[in-house]
Length: 360
Image 1 (cartoon, helix red, strand yellow):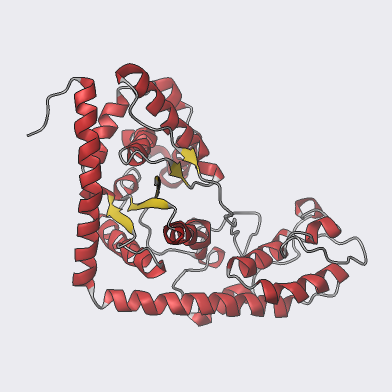
Image 2: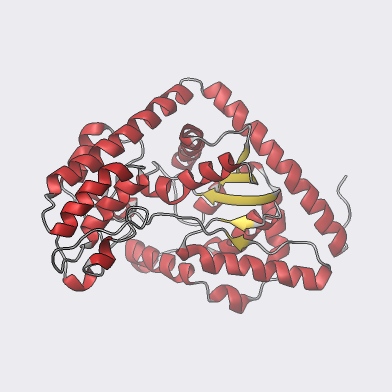
């Protein structure tokens, strides 16, 4: 079978954007039985920006638990913590030597993150070399498992292209070895901020802009109830008329009585309903919207109910795992060792191709 590889940085709390945009898809790929699935918590990427060591440790442990709670099954997938597989960093140094400075300097996310640091820290801002070279570590994350597919968002396509370029250059210099990883295109909803639907859901925007995947019901319902619906210009709205409605429910058309456009806020609420699998609940509300008669309170209530159903179930699973931390630690270390066995084999073969001495 082909291998799928995807990773996530450890954050203080996973939000529904992370879940619907990535983790839910990871579980679906795992359960499909079509791929060898390998997933990682990449804590080494998290140290490229200023951080608190204790917080990083706790976030890494929490992220591993949350992935297990979401359905990542160590019996079906490998779930590793990046820093427990030191071969990643060895391959990174090797790839440093087959990656051009010019190509790395064109990576757009480095500029974005540098600007963030300048804004936060002012004149005394510190930009680490790791922040500049982390796309090479990302390439090593992928290629050390000789992954065939990587499910990524639009903002990561440039980094995957770099991974392909590094693999090609290595193969040209030392012989065909690494497969060229491809993007795995799947239906991935783009979850926007409830408070500002023109922006992608993110914790960095503030508490009102995201819904935690394990958030308590009261605060969750409050956030959805205050979600933006019709604010913003019509230029930011979706196409008007029947074209805006067709496709929301298995491409089933709805009769539209007048020209009407769906704002980004309303579209985001419908997207959340669809992501929760509530297509039957969506259908009558989409018809009302098409007729120009939709009231937003029932829509928001339906979204809240769907999210509460999801988060309540996940909270229970997470709590059970947290109460058995010793077993969780054993699972993560054993799974990371499985990852390391694959990584060691790759490093041994790469060293031989490059004329480096064999490890003993």
